[in-house]
Image 1: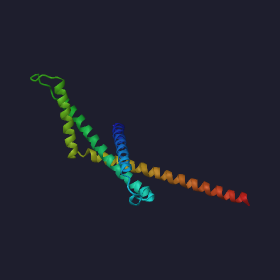
Image 2 (image 1 turned 180 degrees about the vertical axis):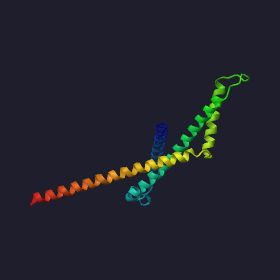
Image 3 (image 1 turned 30 degrees about the vertical axis):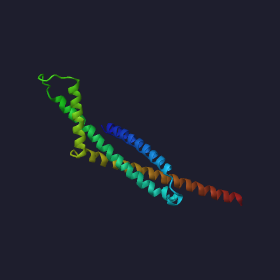
Image 4 (image 1 turned 135 degrees about the vertical axis):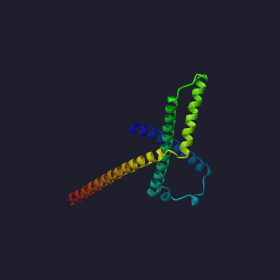
Length: 169
C-alpha cells in the first residue's frame, strides 16, 4: 500500500513540477519582452545566491507535497465512496445504465473533492507529515554525502598540492 501511495504522489509531484517549469518559462519569456533597464535588475549574486535557491525550492517542495497529499486523500475518499456504493443492493425500480453509473462516479468525485477542501478526514495531514519526514531524512543523508565528497576532494587536493610541492623542490 505504501508503494502505491508513493507511486501516486510521485506522479502527482512530477506533473506539478512540469507545470511549474512551464509557468517559469512563460514568466521568463514575459520578462524578456519587458526588458527592464539594467539598474533596476537585481544583481547576479542576489538572483543566484544559494540561500535564496534553497529557501524557494524547500517552500515549493512543501507546497507540492501538500497538494499531492490532498490529491491522494481525494483519490482515497473517492475509492472509498465507490466501494461503499458497491455494497448497496441495486433496486429494480429504476433502470440501471451507463448514465447512472457515470452520475454515481461524478458524485463520488465531487464528494471526495469537497471533503478534501474542508480537511475533514485528516488523511492528507498524516500523509504530508510522513512524506515530509521521509523527504527531510533523505535530504539530510544527501547533504551528509555531499559534505563527505567535498571533504574527500579537499583532502585529495591538499595531498596533490603537497606532492607537487615536494616534486618541485
